[in-house]
Image 1: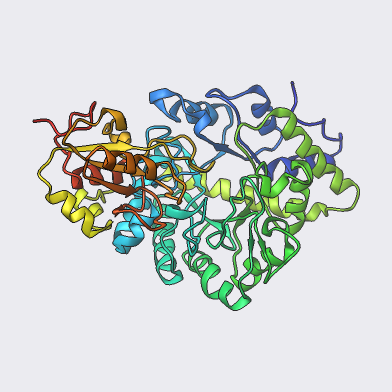
Image 2 (image 1 turned 60 degrees about the vertical axis):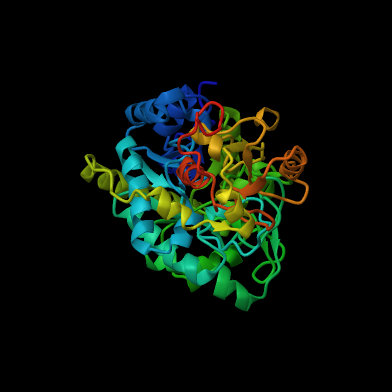
Length: 491
């Protein structure tokens, strides 16, 4: 299709509105080259584009896509989810060199957290990416949470408050805008908003003391953006998800005093648009006070056109004030201009120091007495990694010992070897439990490793699965001299 939206009316006012609507939209796109419709949309006022794993080009990563976007869409604000740890786009699909938030929270050194964020910022700045949709500042108060988990700095607000502020400062000192998410807090949920509509039922007092506190800390630290969540918070608005609630977003603007850009979580998620469809979701989000509408990965031109037309139609009918669209567009443009200026002044920014040693990372693991006895066993070590699902935020990215080349199939474990069985999100019905039982039944001394947020029952809990964590785990398991093909200690 040649144009992503209908032609703007041939009046100055109509053309301005058309551009304002475009400025509030943040599409993704398919593939590793910039499609023509996206360049056309930018010429008509589009300000921001979000990059995903689908835009990675082999070993070159996001470099080709970023280079072409910056050349063909001058002044574009590139955005990405580069949280570090389990969620990475720069290092997709191999896995992140960052340990991730949960490990940083357990280290509990604010300088280390700030340095980790600055390291990510330096990588983003080098690519011309001006907006990082991170950090996650949710308090992971529910161990069964299917989508936050190790993306959180921890289970208490006091811990998350400190590290959220440090992470924001570390990133933004590089010149990359940070985005605290997922407002007003996605930690106390057992439903993934990619697939359904979570609901938080805590009291208003608990909400302010726990969920909202890290966002206040991030706002006080000068965070440039806050991302909404597609969750219902009964204490604030029992009828509408946060993304579509003027009441919830009023808390962010009023009680927390946030004056920056409010960006929605992806509107293609089920929690946002499964009932209404994305065009109507976009209108509702703007009405509620969202400024920048993240449309999700691999946006098709027809989807973009439908959303743009729906917003224009809502303004034409009087349902959505043109002033609300203009206000949102102005905030987005100001963020893009600021980011461009900051990145330009830091074009040769050096990578920050802050690399953690394997010993420092391993010191954050929790281990059982059974594992202590396992380490003392002189038998050769083997590692078996059991397939474990991931949520859509993580995607198909490398994790656990296999991400650093260690691991074999359970049936290939040689007689007499002691075995570490690695998995993540170890629910009671996880297949790793059967693998563990089978290995023990064959006479192996075997222990269980949790590479995600602990749910109980594992002998080692690592609070993350990125290669940075996996290397520390492999060293702890005593397989640092491992034949990287077999996963067994070489004689």
